[in-house]
Image 1 (cartoon, protein in one colour):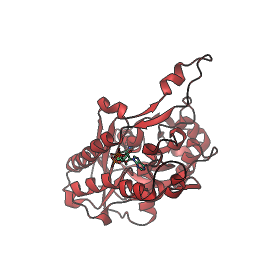
Image 2 (cartoon, helix red, strand yellow; image 1 turned 135 degrees about the vertical axis):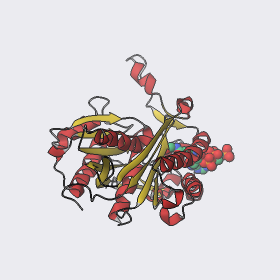
Image 3 (cartoon, protein in one colour; image 1 turned 135 degrees about the horizontal axis):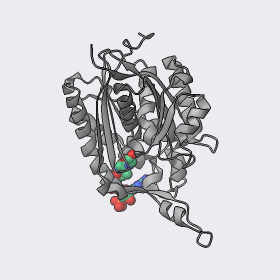
Length: 336
Ligand code: UT7
C-alpha cells in the first residue's frame, strides 16, 4: 500500500464559441498564417464573449469534472482557481465559484502563477490531501487573457486564447495519483512577461485617466527560459517520482509554442505520439492549457490506469511547475 495521495477522479473543460483564425488576424495586424504556424504551431484560438467570464467558463468545466468524478458539490473540501484574469480582484473567483456550485463546505482561494497556475494548484491541492486536511479538492485553471491582449501588437496577439479546465482530486492509498511535484520561480525575469499599465490603473485618479493595461512580452527571452525549464522541471519531477524517462507514457505540456514543446519532448526522449498537443486549435490559454489537454486526453481514452503522465508548464513570474501523475482511481472508495 502506498502512502496517502491525491488522485485525479474528474475532469472537464470549456472553450468559448468564437473562433479567431490566423487568417482573421492577417486582417488585423501585419502578420501571416505562414509566420504564425511556422513560429508557433497555432492555427486558431477561442475568444471569450462578455458573458463567457472567467467564472462562467470555470463553472462549466468544474461541473463537468464533478459529474465525471460522481461528486456532489457539498462534498468538496477545497476549491482552488488558478487564474491571472479574474473577473474581479475581490472576491476571489474561487469564492464566487463555490457559491455558484453550492459547495457549501468548501474553502476557496485563487492562485496566481500565470500559465504555471494549474500545475501549481494541483500541487497545492495534492498537499492538502496528502496531509489529511482535505479528502476532495476541485482545481480549476481558467483565463480570459485576450481581455488584456493588445490587438495591435502582433508579437503577442497571435499567441493567446481563452478557456477553462478543471480536475477533481480525491484521496487514495492505492499506488497511483500525484507522485511528485516541482515548483520554481525566477522573479528576476518577471518583466519579460507582464501587464503594462496595471500599476498606473490602480494609482490613477480622475484627473489622469489611465490607458487600458495590456500584456507585454520579450518573446525571445521567454522562449529561451521556457526551453530550459520545461525539460529540466519534467526531468526533476520524474526523478522525484522514482521513475526513469522510458517509464513516461504521456507528456501534457503547457501549450505555448510547438517549438518549446518539441524541445521538452526531445529532452525526455518522447516520440510525438506521447505528447498531447492542441495549441493548433486553442493557442495559449494560460492556466487553462494543461487542464484542457488533460480533459481532452481523458475523454479520448488516451489515459489508462497505470499510465505515468507528466504535466509541465511555465509562464509569467517567471514561473514553472511539473508533476508526475499515475493515472487511475482504483483506490478511491466507490470507484474502479
Ligand atoms: O505562456 C508563456 C507565454 N509566452 C510564450 O510562450 C512566448 C515564448 N516565445 C515565443 O513563443 C517566441 O519567441 C515568439 C513566437 C513570440 C516569437 O518567435 P521568435 O522566433 O522568437 O521570433 P522573434 O521574436 O525573434 O521575431 C522574429 C521576427 C521579428 O522581425 P525582425 O526583427 O526579424 O524583422 C519580429 O518583428 O518576426 C517578427 N514578428 C512577426 N512577424 C509576423 C513578431 N511577431 C510577428 C507576427 N507576424 N505575429
